[in-house]
Image (cartoon, rainbow, N blue to C red):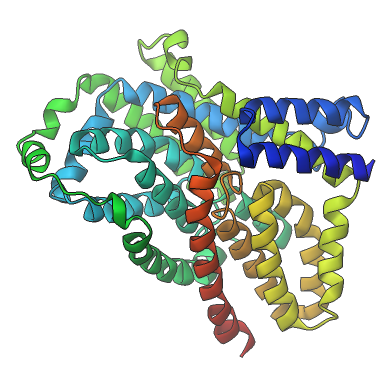
Length: 425
């Protein structure tokens, strides 16, 4: 069964990487084979917390897609696009830095998937105004969201899992993760100047035309905007207060979407029109495939072998966990990886006493930053690619990955001296 599960996953990954078959088809067929061969079953695939579909992620995405769909009808994205372009004075690199910092900050308060859903429409609009290709900007924003989301408990789904297993608070993440995230963001913005240097073509005429625009005129429905922003504010507040309220982000997003449809004139059909159904189906299939690897013990064995290799040495365990998490999170989505690895890390932390807390931060940094390495390394990556394809700006697996690998290597490498000097020296 383990060999069959590995074979299915490897073939699926090859198809995803080569893009010979659409990713949604690959995920559906791969999940179907896991079920057909009894590697998984209905109970394990649909109801298991460890080997099944992560419904919290699916419904979080669904709820926020509905909210974004309603917001799009107000003209607020056009407003933000014009505002950003004017503040950047139409200069491409300055615009990218502004959008990346905005994305990273928002990702620290929201989760990174929600932030990408909100920022993507703005990106397409502002790039259209300035005659720029949106793909590089969207790629940079996704990476910024994964970096920024690492700063807080609610910023990245793996952090929520880590907090639950390690008994860590919102403030714990702020104190231990935010400092290195700020450093990484500064480095990342500088890195963007080099990575996307060929894309920064300044068009003076387009920039001048944008500077003449009045962003306030972009708002088409002020009443709807007020209602939508009020609901979004409540949703964001509930996300931030998750440690106190104990409502899962998926529940908050669904309640927010339902409330917004209820108090506005937007029909259910219109609200559901912009939902990225292929992306949701892809996630469901991917979770089932990864669940097959978990069920057969493949991921567990790899994780335990990594833990055993440390031989009780905290430094080796810390950096092995950092690098191993980055590597594995690049290959499989970091949510199921962290869900599988966190019990093992909890055991390691306990064996090292109070000094062992550094292992939680190594796991979080490795998983969050490793998610940038490939197109399927993090949920936000998959969502962004789905949105880009729907808008007619398809981003291939390797286009994303060739930038992602560089960003991951640089950011993970910078975490080494941080962890060493703050916790181990």
